[in-house]
Image: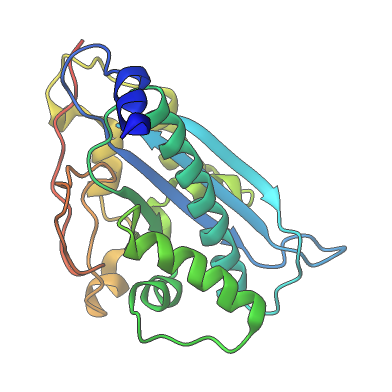
Length: 236
């Protein structure tokens, strides 16, 4: 009882206006990018609302023999980073709305970590799986699919051609005025475009319209089965 009163009295209070924020993350891995050790590269970009605040481009510590393994390791690293970021924001009194939205371009990893019935036999991959699965079950994160052409973390894993690099970096480097309409947000425009969707439409892969959804606390939805609504651009 005394501990609860102490936490209530000294816990950080919310500052600024009464507007909650959303945290989202894009994660990707480039399998066996290092030609000397054949280790993969992990790339991650974290967003606070529509602003990138943290990013990682780092070589993994283990050699993975498959793309699935490198993507699983990258997802586990991103999960731990997002849990750390979420804890720090809450400790500062920042109200976070809903779980952290994490986006990747490997459907096998997303389905494996989303479905509780999935089983992995390799010990190190199963540890990564249960780390991600535990965060999803606790509603700390929500793992969704986004195609590679719209995955911002792709610029952190490997050198891209001029067109792809410009398409992914221009919305992040040159932002619009927050007072403009939400439709003018270049980040949302990039995700709404469909540069490679001939084969994507044939396979009926769900499209993500926005990386910054307004997910209500306690809301339960199935992963990768519905489009994410837009979120209005915050005004100063």
